[in-house]
Structure formats: C-alpha cells, structure tokens
Picture 1 (tube, rainbow, N blue to C red):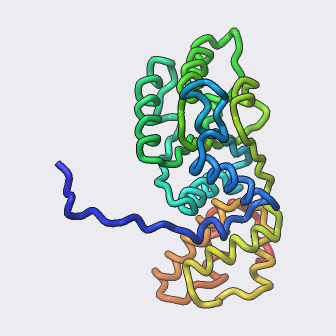
Picture 2: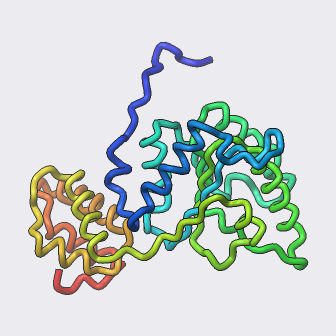
Picture 3: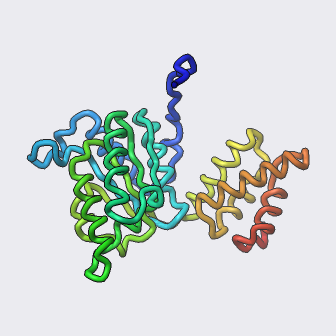
Length: 257
C-alpha cells in the first residue's frame, strides 16, 4: 500500500552544480554529454538496435575530490532523480549480480534517472586467468550495460587498475586532481556559509585553513562537527570550534590555525 495523499512535486537543487569546484572545462563537458543523451539518444547509437543508446562516464580520483558530489549536482541540474548504488550492494559473483543489476537498470531507465555506481573499483579492475570468477562477473556487468539506455556514472579511486575492455566502452573518463589551495578555500567558504550565515571567519583564517592537507569530504565533516559543537556551547560558530575539531580528530597538523 502507498500513501498517495503525501506525494509532492520534486524540489531540485539547481545551485549545487554552480558551486562545484572542478578543473576548467569539466562542467561544460559533463553537461554536454548528459544533456545530449537526454534530448537525443541517437548521438550514442552504435548502429545495432537497442544497443549503445546510453552514456557511460567514469570519474577517477582520490577520495574527497568531488566525484560523488559531481553526480549529485548533475542530477539536480538536469532535474532527474539519482539512484546511487555501491559495489557491496550487488554481491561478488556473476550469479549474485545479474538479477538485481538487471532490475536496477530497468528501474532507472523507466524513471529516467541518473544512475551512480559509487567506488566500483572491484568491478573495474583488470581481469586475469587467476581470477575466473571475477572475469565472469565483469562479463555479466558489461553485457547488461551494453543495452542500458540511460545515464550511468561510475566513480573509482584508482585509474591504474581499470580493465581495457571497460575503457573501450566508457564514453568519457575524467580525472579529478587533488584539490589546490584556491579550491579548498572556496570549499571552506561554502560549507561555513551554509552552516552559519554570519561572516565569523576572516580572510586570513580561510587562507590558513586552505593550506591544510585536506580533501572536500574532510572539510565538510570538520565544519559540520564544529557547528554542532558551537550549538552545544551556545556560542557563535568560529575558528575556535574548528581548531578544537582539528585537534581532536588529529587528521591534519593544524599548527598556526
């Protein structure tokens, strides 16, 4: 039974895409692929009926460089639902993954959704004669994806392990570099602004925070915890709470902050 009286229209986040910190040209490139597939699937048709009508993108980079956030922002920008799936949810063997994966592909195609396979290194890695079960899994994975007619984005932390067969089927591979200080400063500013509308940090403090060896996910976590700490202390959020969190978590050397 479904509570149909509670159904409401989707509220799309159109701002997330503009706030993404990506290398020059990445945003336009990603949008051109996604929007072209949405308007004309024949752009990616390989000439065989029902085959090659979707697009497959791979985002490669270290954790916290913005791969998953990119997918979430793209779905909001093109106003499509996002179906996120981690590798562990499918299983390991070919028998385990075929039925659920086929069902998921059918659902997301019917919903006209963006499908995200998050951190799929285990499926992308090179095949070998020593790992026949993995080879069978990859074969099933590729066969089902060939007839998928939607938008599929996969993320991986390692570019060096990707099987050449996968590379030949991926329309676009984007490499996400480590965040530079300027990008990290913008990320600090964005998360601080979202958590607290007042300007409680100085430009100098933002500059010093940006110099820390942190990725985007770590920055987000620190700001969230520091915000909770300020609420618990019933005080204004600021650099003092950030210092405490950095010291407590011991993730980075925060001397001089």
